[in-house]
Image 1: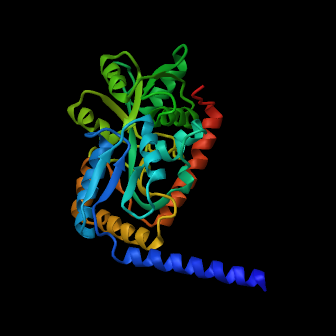
Image 2: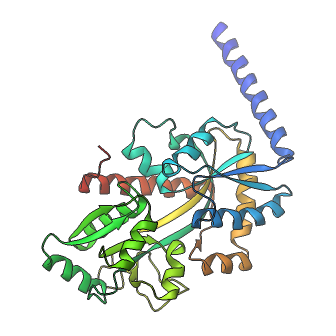
Image 3: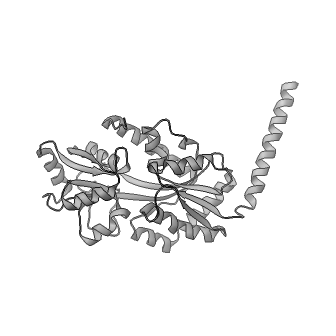
Length: 324
């Protein structure tokens, strides 16, 4: 009898808590929402966040304030999210770095992204495969051939060991058999400077980041890594078009909330982000900057993260990438 009473009491408590959460969500949002971005102002991810936040603010009737917390590849922002109240007033722009790569390479991080609440997928972004102008490679196949015939292989820059640009380069190596020797930099800006100067041979970076250089003709782009060509330069093939049909690699962004955020709040946020991403004017604006809008459900985002985690685990294991 005593155990039965305990179970009934526990059920009542849970029911009260659920009802309280629903009541809070009914009036949500009644104050501004903070969107944390783990990168510096003015960058591609910051621009994406601000573009979408402005539109979502109008749909929710409350301002979404973007707060930049740059550092540690997005991990500083993720730590802030982990400590925030689960009330829907603090959300984060998540990406493979903060959600998957950093936790895999740094197991002692002060947060567990698997506990975060997925809100909405936001965008997928291809990487541009670029080479120095005088390399003598005008196609992906020629680049792979040249890398194999060059002693010690060609050099490929990145934003640093364990960065997105490092991992996509290693994915290309695994997928095509190219011989590339990794040269880590402190960010892709100095790597791009060296690529333009001819000091390294190859560089991968997100299309939105390098779009100005591509459009100005300062660099030679051989392909994009996504599953489809870019609207901004449709003449550039994908790596898959170039002879490796199974190859595809994307960067992506999604919106996440602290652990245990109430489901009614999650659904309301998701509806606002989805409606924004389905707006034709917003879609055109994002596509023009190299972002491919990817509206979806919280479940879609959770599935994406899990699928990507398995892929990165396999890649890191094969290439033995380590921060040690």
